[in-house]
Length: 430
Image (tube, rainbow, N blue to C red):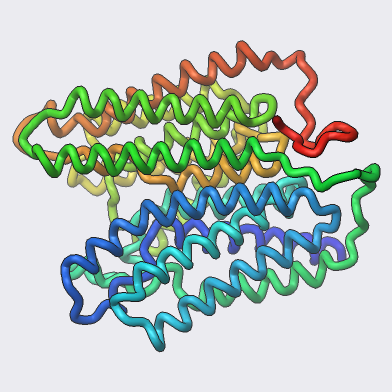
């Protein structure tokens, strides 16, 4: 019975992370807008990166809060509450939504997804088998990218997103979360010494806020620069945006305990590379293949972890994007997607954060916006077409320097920083 219960929990971790990831990556839908104005559509599109940033902060905050509880069922029940909130939001949107409410519903979807992702991560990241399912679900929704064919979105109207994630997938996650919550209801409480006050490790929350808000503001700022002056190279603006992204990643990484910040650097590097490679449509069987390749990379990363190899693989993808990121050849797109899936899986296997909220931040950071989305692709010159790949490579190079700095200040011989506060302290990480 225990094996069956663990298998159910692993499936739950996979489904929950996948549902939360899709919700943070894509808008809830466009079809509910009906005959609406361009302003409302623009507002909905702009809410996606903002909702992702909110979801990341909520996910880490929930993970920190849930980790302070000693009963595992608290984390499972909180994750179930987040999934139920998503289902109610989608059900209400289908029946009573209006174009004016759609942006608000997209924000609600992101908040519920953050609750689901954070609580589920806190529940499973301490258990190796379940952590693999959670990581594969989170990374898999990232590498799948454009789910147009899998979700039956017509090529003639790419805005006709039926519903993301679909209600049947949310319902499946709710069902499995209910089973896992029931299965973990009687797990023994962890032994902890008595405390005089409620303790809350706040630095992971600060790390999430710094990373998410800075990346969001820089992306929106760079987008405005391109809108105001579309025919200018914006090399200086891109340089400033890269610098701000690198500094935000460094601040977040140094706020996390030990070497947990490696996961943040790898995520911050993967996102712009993913965007530079392009959003090629992938059929349902392609999603399955990418999940399998991601699993292979995850297995290799857990067996042969190396941050140097991981950042080198990401840099290789950035170079690939420089020369082939705008290619219309299916074989080239497939090769780039397969390389991204393998690299993402390897990075997830390599990161191995010791503190559960750090792992939640590393996975959630994959859904943050990227400054590459503001960089326009123009077919009128090879240099301009290569700008996204070059920008991504610059971010990867900054992350490589950041990892080296982190390793210098956090040598392996030093005892790892505990995720629990010392006796008598009221705040853990300050």
